Image (tube, rainbow, N blue to C red; front, top):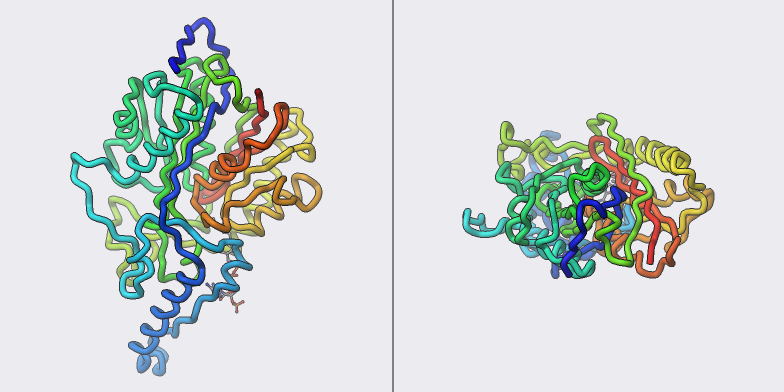
Length: 383
Ligand code: COA
């Protein structure tokens, strides 16, 4: 469908026209993950038994399926490269480095999600003005993945990459919404290819179970250009507060091979307990304040599509916002099958659990994570 809206018809009101999702075929269950991890632990301890006995090397402890499910709510995660992750001698994803004439991995899966969003909106790629590739790690410094996605889709406009860790997608949505509000674009794709398996330390007992791979896309448009069924964006709010509690030091000034011993800080590291304690009150208050600014009673929110990092965090945030313990219908989770997919998590939850809402229902897409960073997008169903 051509979205032939003349500039004079534009409203400056941003809406979500559609979303798209790419899910890798392969998935790792907690049982598979823990079996591989514990094999690695046993081999490590056996190989280092003298040094461990002498007190020079710390003994490694087993991981457990029971702990992972209870502490996080995660039961499985999709990944792009399963076998090497589960091989106790490798424990990291492996893929062939791609040449300059091949599509990058992030662009490849981002394009699949983007095409689905365009199809669901009945939109032609040639009508899109801009592509934002919003994700927590970029495959290369430049050219931007967003520009590669733009070219693959045949979009005449502009694109750029942005990284705000787990809040990349909501920061991308506000950026896209601001282009619409300012009249600088009528249709913007926010694409979040999250290949998180590449920055997870699969040998770290505290975090080896956290992440999974995925790609999402959100089509943000001017209301005049949107299909009859869409989601009005009632308001967006972003917040950042510096914290070292979630960190990844990998970068072009600092790029020793991450899987080498002693370079664990070149992968994801966190103080999970501190994150939990500090982020829950910050995000709950942010949601309540933003609802107030928009003249909404947070207790009347029909659904919250929260960042998918930890089921316990979501339970507490939803409880503070809604004033009662949220059920799955009010605060759906995708953690059980996807794990933490960084910025894509709340978008997957929205994508999979928004069709049943009625016109006029109000909901909230919310992210939080490293930075710290947090973003809220209040939406209302139309059509
Ligand atoms: N298997 C078995 N036991 C484990 C384990 C594993 N894989 N990992 C840790 N444990 C043990 C610890 O050794 C500790 O034992 P102790 O009590 O004897 O010392 C116990 O379990 C509790 O560990 P802790 O790290 O305090 O767990 P937790 O309850 O805080 O849960 C997280 C860990 C990471 C799931 C949780 O803190 C969390 O989700 N935090 C927020 C994460 C987040 O949102 N991050 C943002 C990323 S984008």
